[in-house]
Every structure is written in structure tokens, then in C-alpha cells.
Image (cartoon, rainbow, N blue to C red; front, side, top):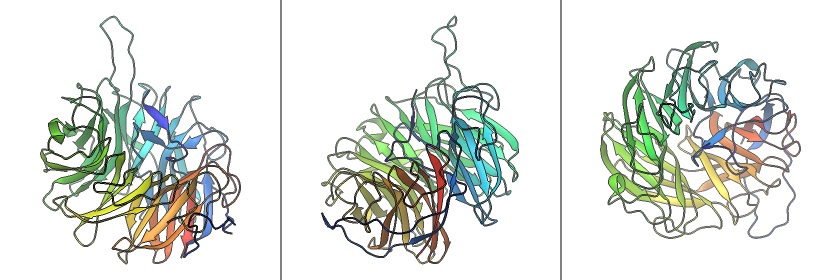
Length: 467
């Protein structure tokens, strides 16, 4: 099975009832450890039950957005739960079910719902739609319960069916009632990790596909980047795969002013759609430009001689685009490395030319999961850090911390801090509540430090910060 529960360095999202201890860790000054401006916790809540409540990474992809601020000032979140107690009202079986939670502005649960069948389901991304409802993209291996139209693999006509992963999209009304749900993909592993609503009410999905049947008409090799456009009622308008003979996937996408799209992801390929892309070695950050009908216009590779992965892309207010990724390289497009894995941020134009780029991190592993442009043009970045030095200011609480830092429009760090306890904590989404007030959505395995109220194992963690 291709689903991997997020490792400590990749974890992510959900919430209910934990308060916080904001005192910074007392750590020795070593390897450049420094104190600096930081946002302080003013409120936090944990969500879950006594079992595992979390989010997944898909075939190595980072989850892009498992929650967001809603128009009423509250929050909508999605993930996966094995619990049937605490904040989780029902769970039909012992595995993971997709979990959707709506909170008000005070971080109190308004409603929550588990969805799935007799096998495993995971929520990956959620968006509030223009009609006030919600669209959830997830992953399913079931063909019963809430799940219909799953694509089945059979080795031959007499063989028993095997259910690999399908991308699963659920449309909910404002109260969480299911309006429709559909499966997308083919008979093998197919995963959607991001969703984007367009102005005409249609939606874009981005992820990775291994199938060459069903909604997938071709596959170049060991998994392709997959982008699909679906109507407001879930019908497939077009579905295309892009890549080469090696592993490729799409992590996130934005729409351009001409109706086309920029898609960011990861590639190990040098042929087919990657021919002439300039792969630097190992895996590269991949930027793919599509026209409005999904036809490839061009593709660019960024990185160095080691492993580099594209996480997200954001359209900036100055007309440029911000690519967020993670890198182990220190050559090629990557100017230096602080040690281990660094966060990489680049500003590019609509032709993919790098305007500027910077690395962030300490001497250990540091990962980015998402970026939010703030109202003043600054950029809030969230992720996970194992470092206690370099750009990770104010220490580390132990193991992996959720990392929240802000840079200005040229990439210079303005504030930085790790949050969590003695176990593993991560941040997935950054939210601007108001100027100088932020939130992040993450997941925590801790019960100490900045975390209290954990229901058991991993809980989803929502944290509000003040600068």
C-alpha cells in the first residue's frame, strides 16, 4: 500500500481543547543558536481521541493544505482518525476514516464528521467553496459505506478484486452534509494531494498516478504527475499525466491570468516531458506550465546534485510566483546549505526564471510544508525542524518542533521559533488572522512544553500566535 502516515518530519493537522505554555526552551548556545523575535502562543487546541489522528503524505509528497480559515472567522480541517472517542463521534471500523472538522472563531467544534468505508480513508486537502460549502479531497481504498465508483484491479477475469488507492472527492454543504462524492483514478495507485476552485465553479486536482486506465490514459513510467479538471458536480472535464520513466508527482498548482496553470512538484526523470528540463541529479524541484486545456507549455527543473522536492507554489501580490521546497543540495540552483535538509524559497516570473532564492534551516533536518503571503507583503512559512541553531531561533523543545517563521518580500527572516514538546510536532498551514496575529495548523505527539490536552497518540493541533 502506498499510503505512509506522516513521519515525524512530515506530520500534520487537527484540533480541540489544549492550552499552551509559551515559555521558550532553555538550551545551550551552540552551533550558532540564537534568540530573536518570535510570535508567542496566545491560544492552542488539540483535536482527536485516544488513537491516531493525523494526516498522510502521499508517495513522498507533502500535504499541501489540510485546513483553512473560513469566511465566518472559523476553521475547516480534514485529516484521518482511528479514534471513536474524545472529539471523534463515530468510526465505523478499526482503520483510518477521513475526518472533517468545522470550528468557530474561538476554536470550538461546531460539527465533525467521519467518512469512509470498510478500508482506509484519509483527508488530504479541503477548500471552502463559493456556495459556502466545502470540497474535500482524500484517498480511499473502500468500495462501500460512503464510497462509490471505486476503480478495481483484477489480475485476470477470474481473480478476486484488489482495491488500490483512488483519489476521493466529497462535496459537503455548510453543515457537513454530503451532497456528492466521487472516486478518480484507475486500477492502480492514484493520489490527489491538492485542490483548487476556479472562478467558473470547476475544480483542479493535482497529485500522482500510476494507472493507465480509468481516468488515466497514459503513464510514462514509475508514477506520473497528475492534473485533472472536474466540474462543479464532479464530472471529469480533462485528466492528464506528465512525466518521464522515473518517479514524478505534482504537489500544488496556481492559475495564471491567461487561464493556464503553474504546477510545482518533484521529478527524477530526464525524458518525455522532462527532456531538456535540466535535471541536476537525484530528484529535482519541478515547475510545469500548462495551458487552460492541460497541454504542456514548458517545464523547468530546479535544484542541485542531491535530493530536492517542490512543496507548494503561491501567486504573490507583485505578479511573481513563490516556489517553496526542501533541499539537500548546495550546488546548482541551491546557494549553500546549513546542514541536513534545508527549506528553499524562490521567487520566479511566469516563465520560471529565478529572480531570487534563499535557504533556511539549521544543521539538522528542516522541512517546509506551506507558505502564506501576509497583508503587508511578508511571507509566513510553516514546517518542521529538528535543528536548534542557524535560522531556527529560540531553541528546540525536543525531537521535531513545529516551525513558524516570517520573512520579508526579499526573503530576509524577521521572526522565527519552534513550537512543541518533547516528542514530534509539526506545522502544515499558516494563516494570517490579522496584522501581527497568526495561526498554524499542525499535528502533535507531545503532552508537555507548549502542548497540553493531547487525547492520546497524535492529535491535530491548532495554534494562535501574536507577534
